[in-house]
Amino acid sequence: MNAARIPIGISSCLLGEAVRFDGGHKRDSYIVGTLGQHFHFVPFCPEMAIGLGAPRQTLRLIRIDGEVRVRGNETHELDVTDALRATGVERAAMHPELCGYILKSKSPSCGMERINIDQGWTRERPPEKTGVGQFAEVFMAARPEIPCEEEGRLGDPLLRDHFITRVFTLHRWRQMVRDGLSAKALLDFHAAHKLLLLAHHPQTYTDLGRLLADLRHADLERLSQEYLLTLMTGLKHIATRDRNGNVLQHLMGYLREALDDGDREALARIIHDYREGRAPLILPITLLRHHFRRHPHPYVAGQVYLDPSPPELMLRHGM
Image (cartoon, rainbow, N blue to C red; front, side, top):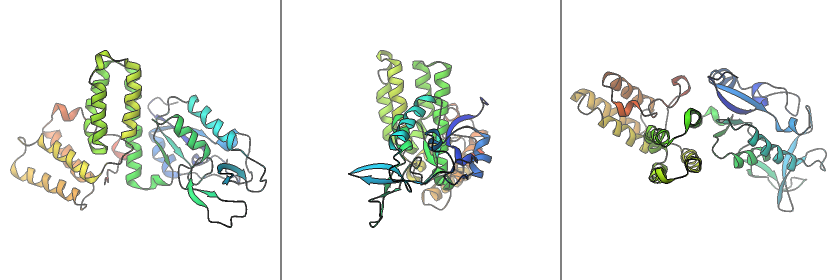
C-alpha cells in the first residue's frame, strides 16, 4: 500500500471487478481516476465473500413475518441474511485503518438507504423504500466513526465535499494517534478543528470542549474514543450557508486591521452573497486565502477550515 494515500473500503464492482450478479461490474471513473490519486482502495464484495459467485441469481430484501431478510429471486429458499451480516462484522474488525467506505447504491447487501423491501413474494403491494443493505447496516453499526457514502451520491458536489471532508478529518485523527496520543496532542487537534466544527455543528464543538475540560484527570484512551465518536457524529451534519457565513465573518475579523476599506467591503460583500445563495463557498474561501497569504495569522494558519483536504478534491459549493 502507498502510505501517502488514505485507506478507503469500497464495493469491488466500483473498481471494475467482475463481481456483479450478471458477471459484470460498475466501474466508476471518478472514483478510480480522481479519488484513486488520494485514496488507497480496499475492495470487498460481500456476495462473493459468502460464496455466491458471479454470475449468480439476484437478491432482494423481503419482509417475512415482520423481519427483513435477503432472499434469492429465483430460489426463494436461498436466505443469505445471516451470512451477509456476519461478514459485515468480520470486515469491520479486519480493517481498523479504514478512514472511509464507498458502497454500491441500491444493493440489498451494500446499499446505505432507500433499498426496496418487498412485502411478499408476489409483489402485489408496492415495496417500502426504507431498506438498508444487510452488510452495510452491520458494518456501519460496528464502525460508526467511519464516513460511509454511496457512489451515486458522490455525484452531488455538496455530498462529495462533505464525505471527503470527513475522510480527511478521520485521517488526521489517525495520524495524530500514530504520532503519539497525549493530552496536548488532543487539545491541539481540537483547537485546529474548531472552525470546521462550528460550520458543521456548533453543539458538537461545545460538547467536545466539555469533554476535554477535565482532561488531566481522565483516562486518556477512553476519553479519546468518546471524543472521536462525538466528533465524527457531529461532522455528519452538513455545513449550512448560515453556519459557514458565521465562520467566514469570524475569519474576516482577524483581517480587520490589515485590510483597507475597499478590501474589507469587497470581502464583506462576497460573504453576504454567499449567505444569500448568490455565490458558491469557494469564492469567499479563495479571497480569504489570498488575504491570509498577504497577512498571515498564527491562529488561522492552524485551522483546517480553509484547507480541509487537497484543493483538487474540494469544490466547496457549500449550503
